[in-house]
Structures are given as structure tokens and as C-alpha cells.
Amino acid sequence: MKIRFCGATAGVTGSCHLLMSDKHNVLLDCGQFQGGKAQEAMNAEPFQFDPEKIEAVILSHAHIDHCGRLPLLVKRGFHGQIYCTSATADLLGVMLQDSAYIHEREAEWQNRKNARAGKPKVEPLYTAQDATDTMQYVVPVLYQQLVEINDEMRIVFNDAGHILGSAITEIWVKEEDRETKVVFTGDLGERNRPILRDPTIIKKADCVIMETTYGDRLHTEHVADIQKLIDIILKTTRRGGTAVIPSFAVGRTQELIYQLNQFYEHDDRYKDELSRLTVYVDSPMAMSATQVFRRNPQVFDEETKKLILSGDDPLDFPNLKFTKTTEESRQLNFDHSPKVIISASGMCEAGRIRHHLKHNLWDPMSSVIFVGYQAVGTLGRALVEGKKDVTLFGEQIHVNAEIYNLQGFSAHADQHGLFSWAAGLQTPPKQLFLVHGELAAKETFAKLLKDKLGFDPIVLNGNAEFEISGTDLALLNQDDTERKEAENQEIQRLRDQISEIHTDLEDILYNANLAMGSQLSAERLVQMNNIVQELNKSAMDLGAVVTEAGNEEDQIPKKV
Ligand SMILES: [Zn+2]
Image 1 (cartoon, rainbow, N blue to C red):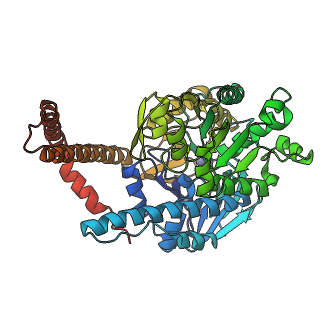
Image 2 (image 1 turned 90 degrees about the vertical axis):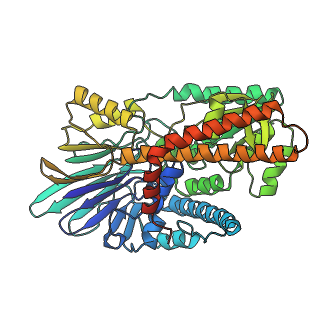
């Protein structure tokens, strides 16, 4: 048996691993790379295998970094089965349509630019039609259902507790007289979280492929953060402000609704006051995702099932309102009564949340409450780090609102959670591959497993292919994606920097032109001089890599 690790090997996105037995090729996940221009450019690159030769995909869950390249796989010739849990299948439709919509809009935007510059048209990575075509290959199965996917492989999905439908997959691979049990964790959730069941402990495995997103970090207390959330909401609305919560549309928003439902309907301390306070969920995708949750109560945990049996819908309460149209969304900004607005995107990079920030960040009565991870370079991260002036829709906004960052709402197990899951293995696996984490997270976690459990984990740092035969392991191929990615990022950063300087320079020259006849101000001259010097310096820095950047560009295939 061979495993080729093709994604999420040097970071946390693009999850994709190819399992090859004597006769069959099966893919574990087919995710999209995310996080910046350099990563996103990797999505259009050729797959590291022939899509036509892949017989099946085993999908761990519906997050885009695990499923987002499936329509591209189909577009490039895949026509096998996509196995996932039925809740994942249900969410997948929503996620892929949304992703296709974004790719189509991006291509449209680029094409308007290209037309003005006399450049040829580009095509989106995939279209809504490609996403629809993908769904015909989906085979929804139940948790704990044994499925023979071919004459050499059987699989079982177990709860992963990460998002609705997420699974830890057990795969038995039979070759000649030997059977090897592979376990793929996908993303692992936290224990004791609302709605979802805990991640399943797997006691036996020959070979484990494990995520390590938070391999070197511990989360803050979840229960304390739920109390903080309601305290901040009440403090804000009592003084007449709006509490704005940027939230991921799938998973986090439903968890927030669940927690607010507890306060609205089951907590006598707050019932009265909250009966006068409306919570708006302003995200079409969050609305669709909430409907998918409501359709899949069979995968909820016991506590949530009990709530439903007692007659309470845990994802609804009287003052909860979903806004559908953009007009309804816009109206929220003209309504000055105290309220709560939950909106996407969670990192404030796109979507309706940006309008709500524009209308509330300046207001000292309002609060912005972050409940999710904020990646470097995002508006969310800038606000969490205390930036006082931000630009939204070309307008500079001074931040007067209170900014809060509650970190207890993660959908990923922290180091402690990951360790408890690994400690559930009764004997050390013959091979344990650590993927889906930054290098530091993987290395820290590997040391912990070694010291405390006597395991011998393999830290992946870039794509690689291994041959596995019983306890024997051979490295067949390795490429240093990590270095390539770091280089790509650096080149992109320099390019951005130069184009920024360039725009500033144009701006100044334009002003200087306008000022013709009168004197150019001394301040403008100094500014201009600084920019030219910086531009020279960047050009020199870039000198060494410019040629490589050129090569890199040649390697990226033109979009079909
Ligand atoms: Zn995930």
C-alpha cells in the first residue's frame, strides 16, 4: 500500500491524500488551498494524480479546505463515488454552490479589469454547474455503516465532533494475505460542545493520519466565554448600542444560536430583558446551513435531542430573525434600536459583515465580538490587535466601538483534546503521520506523543509519498512545499508592496501635475523622495527572486 500526501502537508488547508492499494486508487478529501494569493494560486495547478484514475473519494467533512476542489476534480475527469456522511452530503451542496459563486464573481471582476487592459478572458476555477454536476457522484452513508468501496477496501465513518457530519474514517485495506487498518481523523472537534457528539475514540489502528491544527496551543475556557458573550451583549445593548458578531456561517453561527436559545428560553435571569432584544442572523449562507442542521437532528448529541423532545427547537427562539434580501440587510443600519447582529464572513474579509462594521465601528456605544480564529492579514485580525483606523468601502473609519475576542469557541480540539484522542489508541500505531498544522504545531505535538505515549510520529513538512508494508515504511518521494510556499508568499508580499508604492507614486505625480504652476509642497517632495527610495530598495530585494517568480508564473497552468 502507498500513501501520497498531496495537501495540508505544510499548512492547514488543501487537505488531500491518495491511498493506493494493489488495484485501487482512493482519495481522502479534495480540499481547497486558502489564506492568500499564493495559496489560492495553487488551486489551479494540476493535481498530483490523474483525476480519471481515482475511483472514489472519502470526504471527512464539508469545510472548503477539505472539499473545495471536488468540482475541479470532476471537471478534470473524475467520475467515481464521493463517500461521506449524509449530513456532510447535505452541507456539501450549500458549501460548493457558495464557493462556485465566489469563483464566478472573482473571474467576472478579473475579466472587467482584463477587458480594460486589453488582456484575454479568464475562466473561474469552477462554476455553479460544475458544483451541481459534482453532487451526482455523492454517496451519503450513515455513521457506523460498514461500506465496501471495492474488493480491497472497506470503510466506516465515526463522529469527529468538529462540524455537522464530520467524520473520523476507519479504512481496512486488504492486499493479498495482509490487511492494514488506516485511520484518517479529518478535523477533530472538542469534547462536551453543544449540538455535536464527542469525537469517537478509536482503539486500534496500524496507520494513522492525524490533524494537528492546535498541536501547540490550549483553548481558553468555553463555559466562561459563553457567560462573557451574554454579559457583553447586555452591557452593549443597555447603553443603546449594537453588538456585532462576525461569525463563520457554518457551525459557529448555529452554536451561537444554540447558546443564545439557552439564555432566551431557559435562563430566568435574562428572559425578561432579552424578550425585548432582537438577534439578527444576516447571512444567506448561515440561513441555508441552519436549515441543514434542522434537517439532521439524528446526528445531534443526547442533550440537544432531549431539548427537541421537550418541544424546544434549539436553533430557534422568538426574537431570532434571519434577514434574506440585501434590502433587509441594509435596513438594519437605519434601525437605531439596540440589537445583536450575527453576520459573515467570520474574518471580516467579505460579505455583509463589512457593512455592519462600517456602520458600527465608529460608534462608542457598539461592540464587536469576535468568536473565531482571525488569520494574519485579515481585517478581523487588525481589529483584534487594536488597530484604530480601518478602511471600508473606500472610507476611513475610526474605531470607537469596544472590541472583544472570545477564544473559547473553537471547532478544533486543542493540544489537550488531540492528545486525549491519540492516547485512546491502545497500542502505538505502526505509522502515525501528522498533517494539517503549522510546522511548530506538528513538531511540538510529535514530541508530546513521543515523550508521553512512546509513539514515533512522522511530521510531514511538504508533499511526500510512502510505501507501507506491515511495520516497514519507505519514503518514495518528497518535495519541499514548505519552502516553495514560503517563497511564493515572499514574492507576493514584495509584489503587493511594489504595486502599493506604485499607486502612491502615481497619486503624488498626479497631484503634482495639478499643482503645476504653483510650487510642489516641501512635504510632498519628501514623501515622493521616500517612496522612490523604498521602491529602489524593494526592487533590489526582489532582484534575487524576480527570475524565480517568473518561472513560478510559467509553471502555473493557465486556467482552462
Ligand atoms: Zn474543518
